[in-house]
Structures are given as structure tokens and as C-alpha cells.
Length: 266
Image (tube, rainbow, N blue to C red; front, side, top):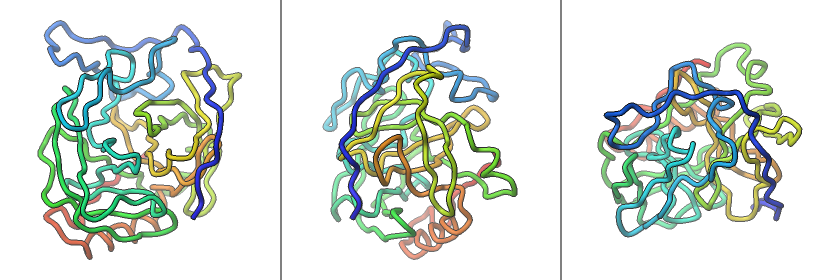
């Protein structure tokens, strides 16, 4: 089993001059609105705390942060265990195959307002490489984000190279890295401090399975779950092979959402 190597947290400042649409006056939830054309590079704000939560409570409702991270919908990520789970259907989550949660175990999500939701992981199967998929006892309701995957279209790998992505970690924070390249069914990231975009992190032991996202049509799309350290590398969720094997294992696990993995074009 590969484990993430110990690394060093690196921070850098944000280049000024990139604007974001603000919160409307009647937006009582405090969620920042984003446009359909927004990219990851548009999201960070200078020196903002990269934490998703101001106060996290696995046993109750949580308080969401008020920094730029409010522009990102993390409601489909379960952080109550370092072995992070990410929704790909209403009843199925992906994890690192080498860092799966126990069966059964509690899987807790918090919506955009911090409201707690608990499900139970009742089964899991390895999919392909370091990807595993798990079945929840019941589907999650509307209000908790189910992340689509990238459609494996011609030229996708070339178009992705150099794109900025949101990388999450075990401490419930968001970092900004960029796609270094894709090799087969794996994608790897890089972090260039000279570009001074948001905060970057060298991934460490315990970050395995945390997801990374690219923004498409104003929403986050799952692109990777961490397998190794450094700037990050792991299963590529734009791989036709991985997607087909994921769908097959979801069907084998069953559940009302079986076969309903969604893909979007980049």
C-alpha cells in the first residue's frame, strides 16, 4: 500500500485583480454566488483562511467559514473520518482503495449551511487502481452535492494540462494546484509558487482519498482522489476505463442510485 509521504505546507499570496461576484443582499445562507464561467483561478482571495469550516462538529451541525471557500460546495464530502468519502451518486461514495473506511461505519455530511446528515457505509468494493466505491445505507437528499465526473472526450488530456484545480486535505481545507499531466488512468498535479495563486500544500500521510476538483459550468467536478504525496496524484476520473469499472461496481453494490454516475464535458 502506498502511503502519502510527509511534506511541508507551503503558502503563497494571491495575485490581485481577479474579481468574483459577491453575495446578494437576500442571500441569508451566506453562500457566495458564482457564474457558470468561473474557473478555479478566479476563486481564491488574498490571505483568506483556506478552511471549509469555521467550526466543525462531526456529531452535530457545523459552522461554515466565511472566506473564499464558501464559493466551493463541499457538501458531498464526508470529513468525519480522515478516510474521506466523496459522493458520486446519491448512495455511493468513492475512497482511496488503500485507505477505505471500515464496514459498517458512520459517514457524515454537512450541507451548505452546516446542517448535519449521517449515513452508514454498509459495503465497499475496489474499482481500479487506488479507487474504491462504497454503498450508503440510504440515499442522501437534495441539498448534498453529488459530484459529476469528466466525460472522457477526445483531446481531454491536452486541454487539462495546466488547468488549476481545487485540492482538499484531511484538515478540511482547500488548496490550488494545477494539472501537470495524465498518464493512463492516473493524473498528477504540480504546484508552482511563482504563479502565486492561492495556497498550495505538499500532501502528507492521512490525506489519502481526499478529492480534487475542476470547475465546469460553475460547479465542481471530481477529477482525482489522492493516492500519493507531493503536489498530489491519483486515479483520474476522466478515464474511460475507470468510469466504466466504477459504474460496474456501483451496479454490483446495488442501491437506488445504481448506474447513475453523471459525466460532464470539459
